Image (cartoon, rainbow, N blue to C red):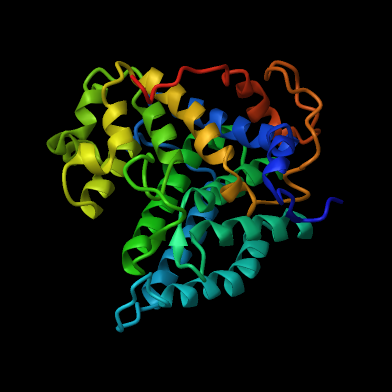
Length: 334
C-alpha cells in the first residue's frame, strides 16, 4: 500500500507528476465529467442515485456548520479567524460521517477521501481559498468513482448537483469569512478562486442556440441565466464581489467572450487548466498521493487510446472518455 503523503517537493518533481497515473486519472475524470454535461443545463431534472443523495446530504451538513460558526466581530485585515473554527469542525466531524455514509469503502480509502474533502474548503492558517482547494474536491469526487461508490450513470449529477452545491458552499465561505484568494491572482488570471466551473460550465453551453459567448459579459444576460448555467453563475459571483469595469478586473474572461463557439472555449479552457493549475508547482506541492491516486509513472503516456493499466472497474467511465482529451487550441489570445 502506497504511503499517503505529498510527493512533489520541488519544481523538478513536476515532470513525474505530469507523467503519473494520478495525473492521467485526474485529467481523465475532468474530461469525462466535462463530456457528460455537454448541453445539460443545471435545471435539467436528473434522477439521483442513493449515493448522490447521501453525498448531497453531507454537503448540506457542512453548510449547516457555516451557520453554526458566527464570524468574529473584530475587524480582520486578512480573513475572519472564525474560519479556523469552521475548519476544525470539518476535521473532527467529517471522518465519522464519511465512514457511516461510505460503509462499503475500506479504512485507508476513507482516510484519503476524508483528507481530500477536508482540504477542499480552504486553508485555516492563511484563511484563503483557491484552485488547489477546488482540485482537492475534484479528487474527492474522482476518488468516489475509483472506489465504486459513484457509477457512470452518476456523472451528470456529479457536476450539476454535487459540484454545483459545493460551489454554493465555498462562495458562502468566501463571503462570510472574508477569505483571501490563494496565491497572487488579479486581472490576468481567469478568476480569483475557481477554475473547474468555467470548464464544466462552458460544456453545458455547447451548441446553445440562444447564448453566444459574447453575451456572457452582459449583466442582463447573466441575471437571466445564472441559475441555469454554471458558467453564468461564476460571472454573476465575480460581478457581485468585484468593482469596476469587467474588462479591467477580469481581462482573461473578457478575451474569452470574443471566441466564436462554446466548443472552442471549452477545449481551450481544458488546455489552460492543465497549464495554469495542474502545471503549477505552488498548487501541486500540497497534493497528497497514496492508495487512490498513485504517483508512479503511467505506463502508457502517448495518447489516451490504450486501456488504463488500473484494475478498478469504476474507471471504465474515465477510460472511455480519456480519448476526448486531444491537443486543443489556445483560446486566450484570440
